[in-house]
Length: 76
Image (cartoon, rainbow, N blue to C red; front, side):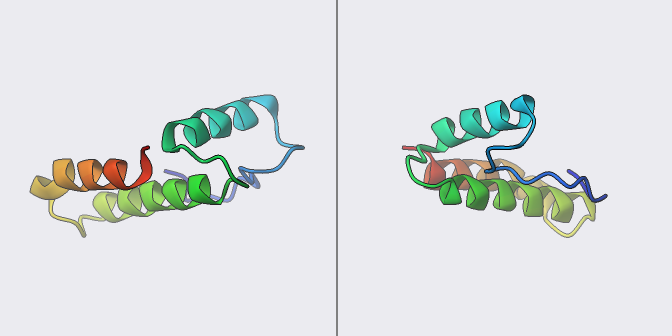
């Protein structure tokens, strides 16, 4: 995931159409019918997991369980 600053904020109306569309798809997937907070939390969890995995700080053999657990917590 991104480690360099890109200046993008995900839940703002003045973002590029592509970013708004991607955020909308993710929001729909997690069932976020509010202000986008649940989607930001989900994105943050994915981001954190990816950075920790890249750094070798998470057990590789547990990846399927992490993905399944995260998905079950955020999908309707």
